[in-house]
Image 1: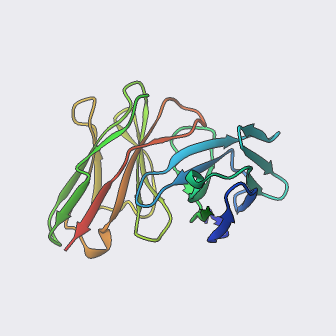
Image 2: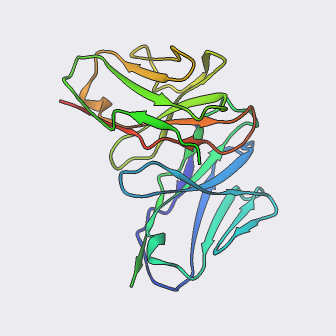
Length: 112
Length: 114
């Protein structure tokens, strides 16, 4: 059974701080990895794809460790608007037919 | 930016009734998906659809469920004989091609079974 595990939190972090989330996935053959964010009762929205070499998008940095089946997300200089649930998401195949496997999410609260 | 749109935003239905959830995927996308999220739980894959047929489905997607693309733009999820445990958010998503690109989600339909 395919699983994606995340610390559910909540992480309570002061504005301006740096925060990091991790996730692990069970299927060593997984091909693609993403971080989505989900606001309360809203749809998942793509935050960033995660590439093998690691990648950065503004204040967000994602890392992938295939050997350990581990994905991370780092948020620098956190803003109040970063408060959300962050979903670690894995796609098992290289094709379009497979559904995404979601973690349950890590809840982040940025405090003023 | 093109969006996946879903209607209705909220559907309230009596247990045992049939319900149809509608989605309009992004126009040049080729793969379409349905997911559900029970309150407080993770998002779960139901089914993927390509070239007018089901590509993959999860164990959740049993005979109670069906999908259809009736007119080349709408993509529907039908749930027959609804049960209380079908209450959830249902998200439609689409993907531009046969690749590992991220999927784009609609804003969901909240289904409440009474």
